[in-house]
Image 1 (cartoon, rainbow, N blue to C red):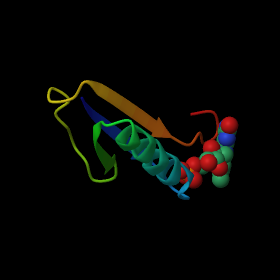
Image 2 (spheres, protein in one colour):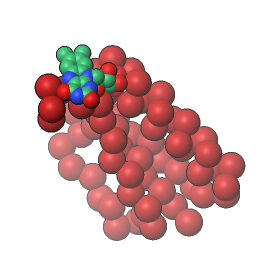
Image 3 (cartoon, helix red, strand yellow):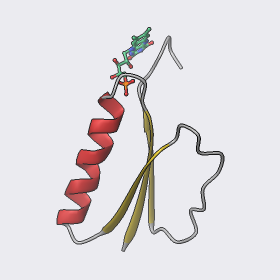
Image 4 (cartoon, rainbow, N blue to C red):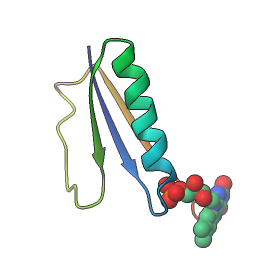
Length: 61
Ligand SMILES: Cc1cc2nc3c(=O)[nH]c(=O)nc-3n(C[C@H](O)[C@H](O)[C@H](O)COP(=O)(O)O)c2cc1C
């Protein structure tokens, strides 16, 4: 099983949480890629069984 986690983080919380989710999934035996969305124009989800997107909320968005 392969997982992709993509995060958007200004102050670092979403980054830390994404890395921790990645560690938990790795401990469960998954292969995990964790990517910063900054500068990422597009990504291919087809190799992955699980895709997680995460970010902080700023002014309701
Ligand atoms: C200017 C600003 C606006 C925010 N607006 C919201 C909001 O509307 N709703 C919310 O739940 N949290 C809000 N937050 C809290 C952030 O979502 C929270 O600090 C989050 O952990 C930031 O993620 P990051 O550290 O990955 O950038 C706001 C924080 C800042 C600094």
